[in-house]
Amino acid sequence: RAAFVINRRVSTTIIGREARQSLAEQPLPALRSEVHQRIVFADSVAAGRLARETAPDSAAAREITALVDELLRWP
Image (tube, rainbow, N blue to C red; front, top):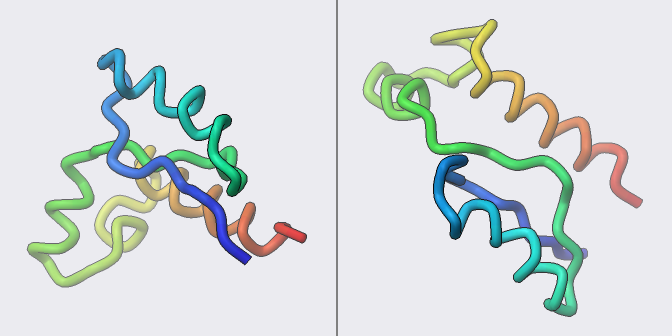
């Protein structure tokens, strides 16, 4: 199985808003979960840790959790 995941999305850009429309035209599905570009991801890499370890209550941690949950439920 294969699917697209919108990754490093910048919410305030036109390309960020249009990404989902573009993926709708592709033969593979796009998952609903999106991962935005967030500073906590860079900070986590520098610390050698996961975003949910560095900032467990952050939007980044919630996005990764949502993506994992969606993948586990994906048929």
